[in-house]
Length: 187
Image (cartoon, rainbow, N blue to C red; front, side, top):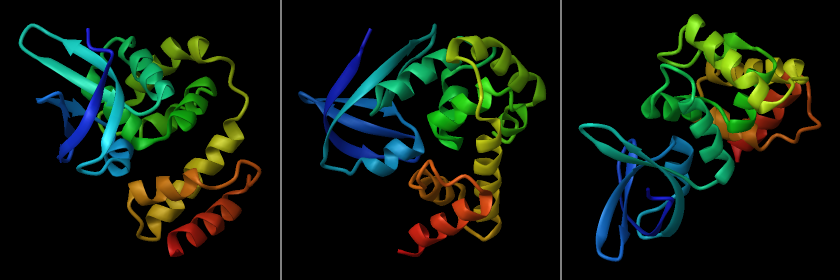
């Protein structure tokens, strides 16, 4: 199994990067956030999940160990494959996903393309205990509402998510989150 790759990013695509490791180019599927953070020509070390199937082998790479752990937990849910797990991580930050799952917020998970109500319930059922007890469902609701508000103002999902990531934790209300995020987006 390949645990990590370390080398130079030589190409970026919509869903993957190619990392040159000692003259060998590895195609590594990454989240949109990772794709945004890496630049062509940049050195990078990615923790990887090596998915092997009968007809294919694929690498899924993460800059953070926590992202990899959550990805692998998602793979343990029946019916969730690597591409779906990566899609789930594209939609929300790992912290938001953890809160969504531990608080039983299936409504947030169903906003993800390809995840219906039954699959969302299955994710919550399978991972709730593994991720710990949920206690922040109101904070999650405010975060989801703020994300939707920014999207309704014309910002892309990625832009809104990035701006909300920089909002301090002590800002709790939806309107304050949106105001702070708008200041970040205005810079």
